[in-house]
Image (cartoon, rainbow, N blue to C red):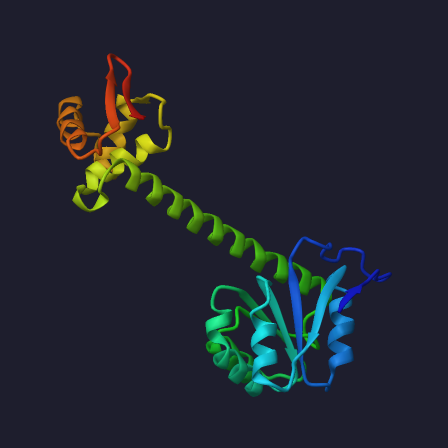
Length: 235
């Protein structure tokens, strides 16, 4: 079920669609209290009850939700559940909200794999909002970085065999791949090739580019523009 909430006390809640969160409620104890706390955090949240069968729970945890909130009272049981379903949870944000916890219990849950553990008796909803948003921002930054890394590796594989490149050659081709079809200045490429050292000389750059050209696949080439720089051209 999806619960729509319009809290009077707190109008700063996380808007619908801002974070695709789902609550998996484990056990009846303090469930109403946890739901009330979440009502001051989220404008709308999908709430699901933890079932009694492995098959049902596998479907529940395998559902398309990148941000899972596990709500319960028994920290040990929640940690055991995380370990049991870890293959389904490892690529998601998983936050626990608990009641009556101790520092030792929360530390054990973090060690079990939870991204964050919040005791709603100790964390105000406003702090909960800030924490959820911070965790989601970190997730988005990490996801974008992974996507960019994958896309760069895919682009690189289309112009050469990365396994035969030296470190300098890889830096140079990746710099050219950032702007395929556009000229990259000699000065920039000299700095990229030199990494943390002083920029390499123009002559050394020419030698490196000559070696790099021989490693490109058919249909890709590096052209020199006099007094300007180099450009990567692909067919």
